[in-house]
Length: 209
Image 1 (tube, rainbow, N blue to C red):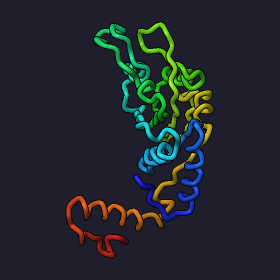
Image 2 (image 1 turned 90 degrees about the vertical axis):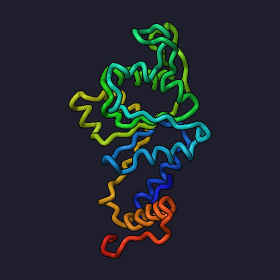
Image 3 (image 1 turned 30 degrees about the vertical axis):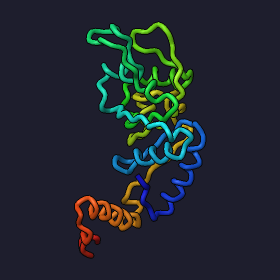
Image 4 (image 1 turned 180 degrees about the horizontal axis):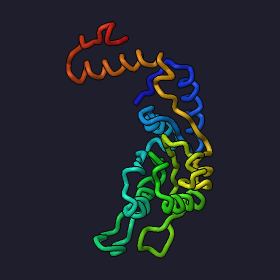
């Protein structure tokens, strides 16, 4: 997806994001829900040396706490009831690529410890396994929460916050960049003209306003 913009703050943000893409630093994206943090994460991945590999995305707020470890690290056959076969986790799937952790502020504290260990060591262990495995993963995390405030309230680990906050970008909301609205209108209209085979589809001046 292109990042449609006319706003100078957004233009500057994209220049910085492209520069950050060339390193393997962990990136933290902040901003309101719906500002396009996921779009920016895909932009960073597409400009990185990992672009040939598919980016792996997980919504940390949508995973039940009981499934977190198995989803992230995978599990061995017989590790628990119902584990009838070996399963690769998200970290293995993202080996050599980028792992996008959306809504990182919703990650349970017990999993924050395990993620921190992986970020520090580059190693993890499948549930039910006795040996560690390595994975070369670039992590991009995003949140709409105020993480320093969450740290103060002891709902987010300070050490994990500092580990994630190596490079950070704040995505401004659309209300702070009104000049982007006309460009976005035209971008989406063009998509719908093609999708619905309606070449003359347009908005009235009143609707645009």
